[in-house]
Length: 270
Image (cartoon, rainbow, N blue to C red; front, side, top):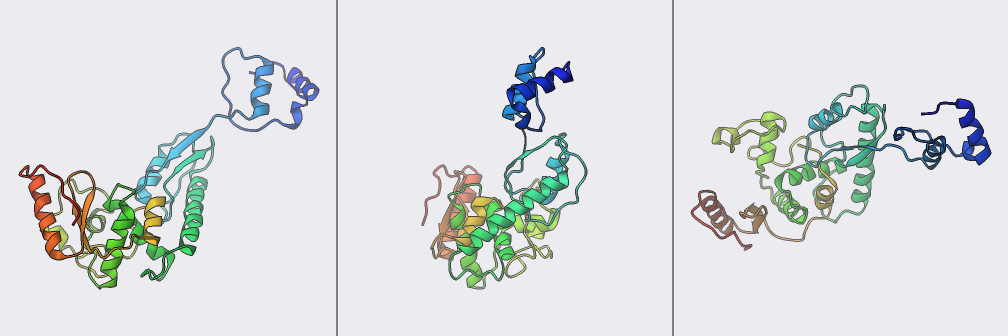
């Protein structure tokens, strides 16, 4: 693009651009003038690359996305589950995958520290990492950001009463490491003896089951005030909540009827 280095240096000095040139990756149209090239580098109009890590992915799935980003270099081991903050990150051509993972981990740590300092009183966590565990379960249970504080509250209420969490995503994680089963959970799978099967084990699983996003982390540390202990799909993409087993069983029966086509109206909160 710069056919004469001498002309470029002279123009940079004469115009004062030499003191403000910005390093980076640039894209220029064919036959761009020297002045256009100089102006773009002076203004820092660099090519921007982005990598998006969606909420709820496992760390292995996040690393797989980075491996497919051709702008990045090097390899990186899979970081601990739940240690990354799912976001869209700007990356530079030639940046190492290890450096990007480091930024993701730092972003999560910074956000978690802020949320932990402002957390609600009376939460059952002994450490911020336990909040991440619950947040990862909340992330996998609902895709609706508005529901996450309510879902978090249900699990927190169950922990307070010594009830098992009975979360399907934890059971799946124990069986496959987070890879979808491809079918509904079977009775034998619900009875599987893994450290993550919250139908079997009391309390929280030993680690997160995914990387929760901002909304799920915030929900785990500032849940909705409620006495609800149960929730089930409502047929519209959300859930219906209840505080008694009797109401929950009615909601479950209605949901099964919806699945089988015997009911048409969505569930309503009780």
